[in-house]
Each structure stands twice: as C-alpha cells, then as structure tokens.
Image (cartoon, rainbow, N blue to C red; front, side, top):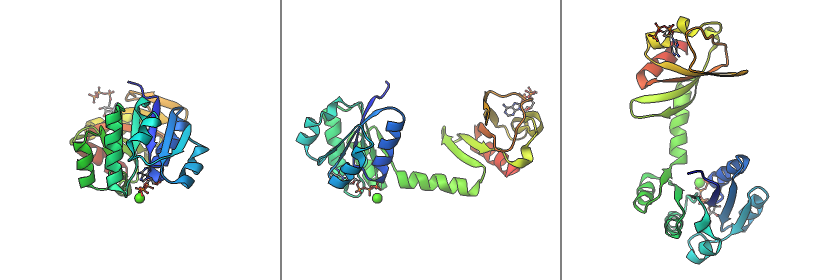
Length: 219
Ligand code: ATP
Ligand code: ATP
Ligand code: CA
C-alpha cells in the first residue's frame, strides 16, 4: 500500500522534521499542534497546519483524520496526550499509526493500544551515533536480524585503485559487497574486477562479525 496523505500530531522538532521531509518527498501533510505559534511557523511549509488539541475526539474527527493513510504521533513530554491521540487515530480508522515513545514503558503502552510502529528517536539515534563513533567508515546500517547487517562503508584512501579481488572481503571475512556507490553512479552487484576509489561508498552484507572484521581491516 502506497502512502499518500499523512497527519502529524505534535510539531516539535521530531514531528516537524518528519513533516518537512515528507513534503520534500512530494506527499501531503496535515500538521496538528495545540500551540498556535508552532502551527503558524509550520503552515508555511506543510500542506495544512491547524491548531487543535489532539486529545479531543471531536477535533480530530472534524479535521477528517480518518481519511489519512498514515498518522504520526510526535508528542513526547505529555505521555497521556500521546496515548490518547494514538488511540483516537486508531479508532478513527487511520490505517497506519506510528508513535514516538520517550521511554520503554511509554513504548510498551503504545504497543498495547495497537500502534503499528513505535519509534524511540533519542535512543535509536544514540545507538547509531555510538556505532559511527567507533567505526569512522560506517555511514549507515540496517540490522536485518540479530546476526546479519547491511552496512554502508566509506572507501578509505588505502583502498583506492584496488579491485574487489584485491581486497577480497568475501574470501577473507565472508561478507559481500552488493553495491558500490560512485560519484558517477551506482554499480549494483559488482564483480571481482570492479575497482574502488576513495569516497566511494560500499554497501556490504554479511554477519555482524564479518562486517566488523572487514571494517577493522580498512579502518
Ligand atoms: P520534540 O523533542 O520533537 O521537540 P518533545 O518530545 O519535547 O518534542 P513535546 O514538546 O512535548 O515533545 O511535544 C511536541 C509538540 O506536540 C509540541 O509542539 C506540543 O505543542 C505538541 N502537543 C503536545 N500535546 C498536544 C496535544 N494534546 N495536542 C496537540 N499538540 C500537542
Ligand atoms: P567466490 O567463490 O568468493 O565468489 P570466485 O572464485 O568466484 O570467488 P571471483 O568472483 O572472481 O572469484 O572473485 C574473486 C574474489 O573477489 C572473491 O573471492 C571475493 O573475495 C572478491 N569479490 C568479488 N566480488 C565480490 C563482492 N561483490 N563482494 C565481496 N567480495 C567480492
Ligand atoms: Ca523533547
């Protein structure tokens, strides 16, 4: 199912960042916040921005919240408001509801009331930054499971001019390079002859250990 229309409740730093990015990506976004100044600020950017208390069922109903494909509850500090807004969006029939949690307990409550996805922005970004701090070449990663990861690694200068056969990550560590992103374009499923250059980005798939070993060998 392709998402077209989004409603975002709470236009703090997190909610407004999601909203602005969705607009950049070409989607329609209704932003709701109880703070008038915040709404004023965001009304220049979002498709619509309205002042309303998202814990009031009638307010959400009259804004047509049920017609949205996806709702994001981005209220943090007021946990009660976050929970009420989430329940209301689910009950109004919003197909997918994503909510921000400020701690584990808040997240567990959101899951109990049927939220489709809980996001812990500070916790998750903290984990991500820690990984990047200890591995300078690591640009980004996706955990496929507890054991397997896909990582984006910056190619360091010491690999410039070397082919995949020279570097031999599959032979030495057991991880495979599924793509090389070069300034001129991306090479999907590269082969042994493809050559790396500093600042290329390698997309590597493998076990966590194999990727760590590969990273250490080039870091
Ligand atoms: P962030 O870290 O994203 O800036 P936060 O986690 O500190 O936000 P809050 O500042 O508590 O969270 O809330 C984010 C926004 O949600 C604020 O702009 C606030 O006005 C709005 N908000 C809080 N409660 C409600 C509510 N009941 N209805 C509508 N908006 C609300
Ligand atoms: P393999 O059995 O590992 O596929 P191969 O004997 O078929 O190796 P080539 O495909 O020519 O030989 O590759 C030589 C070496 O280059 C491989 O052992 C591997 O370490 C490395 N290599 C080639 N392509 C990749 C890739 N996409 N990702 C990681 N390493 C690669
Ligand atoms: Ca906050």
